[in-house]
Length: 116
Length: 113
Image (cartoon, rainbow over all chains, first blue to last red; front, side, top):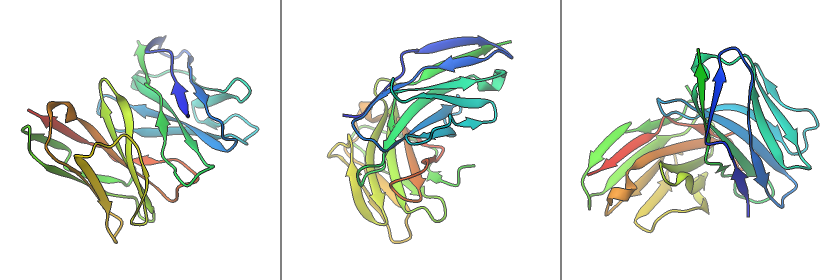
């Protein structure tokens, strides 16, 4: 069964510093995608970054990068130069591409608080 | 703005009642997904439709049903509501089932009193 584990319920980071949010996953499929979403207090789910299982390079999107270690089944999100607006819940998610379904499986999330 | 529209944004109702949540996917997206987010259960996948047909079912109660119409909008029907059904219900869409990210609407916050 597919599973996403986020072991950090809450994290604090000082403004302008970098922070790493952990995510491990479990799947028996070879073809899958890993995603990170941000959910601010207003509630909407904002897509941040994507990594395909066959991508050899770690994904980057602006201040976001994904540290993908396939053998360890981890897909950690790194946020550089944290800003106050980064305070939010962050969810790691996975999507298997082997079957006909396409739904995302989410972890329980990490609440990030950025301190001024 | 993700391009996914959900209505209503907020809904307050009583136990035993029935409500309908509506979702319009992004233009061109054929797949629609429904998720429930509650404090104790996190984000739970409910059901997926692709081009009008049910494609996958998750943790959806029998009291809940959904459909996707020919114009690709979708509705989630929740009946015989219980206090525990209070949650944020998200609709998401994607072009197809096998690639890319899901784009989420802003959610419909349901409160059952």
